[in-house]
Length: 95
Image (cartoon, rainbow, N blue to C red; front, side):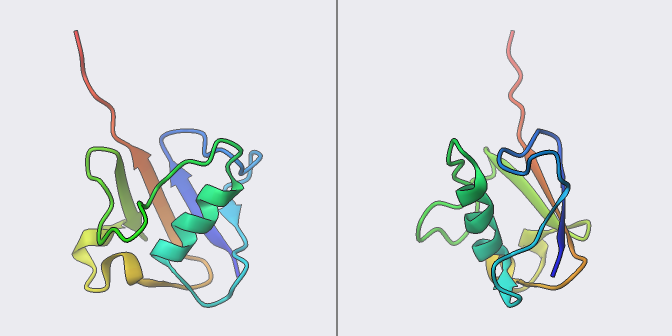
């Protein structure tokens, strides 16, 4: 199984790849983000333990171009081979 990743930052731990082969072929978005976090040498926390949603001030995540919040299952949405997960870090303006 291959899950493609698109991002507005270099995802730590991907080593210049744009996909991940998850450990399990049955994985949901929450599990995928936790697994992706474990690949990072700096341990990025995409999903806080026990959280029902991602912090919108930190991350914007889509599955195949659809914001995960608009999908009924949210973070528990099952992923399938070939899905594209877009992870964008939210930029803060300043001056």
